Amino acid sequence: MAVATKSKPRSTFKAKANQLVDFARRIAGHCANSAEFFNAIYGGKGMANDLFPSEPERNAFLRSKQCKEIRKIKLSLPKPPVMDAGDFTANGHLSITLRLPKSVHAALMAEAAAEGVSLDQLCLSKLVAQLRELV
Image (cartoon, rainbow, N blue to C red; front, side):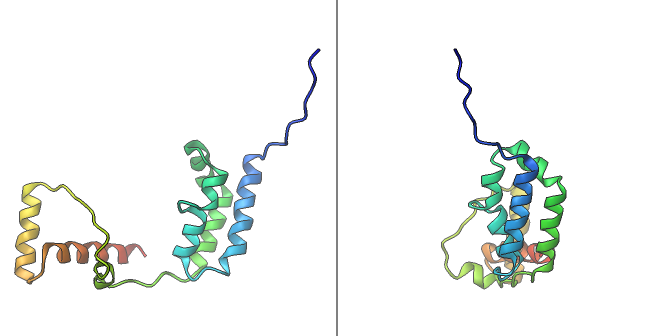
């Protein structure tokens, strides 16, 4: 004879989404800026990853009204400070390998030479300029 076992009530999608909004409201006042807030929610160890571990769940959350509410909270926070290119190169520990067509490499090298800077400095300044427009 089969015995019925009680299972733990499963959290619904809406309950998880509301839990994330509640968390966002609680931490918003403790975050220095919108980037810190975003990382606490969506970063590698952010609560969203725990609540929505699969890609379909995360995609569904991104379309939810709760996600829109979290975006509004993020927009209400100060923007993070913009760093100078020197701030990025000071520690010298981070690097990116980027494969370029020869023509693009040659054009960047020519521009760097004309400006009297290294290829790294030129590329970093171009990247930082683009990031500034996004922030």
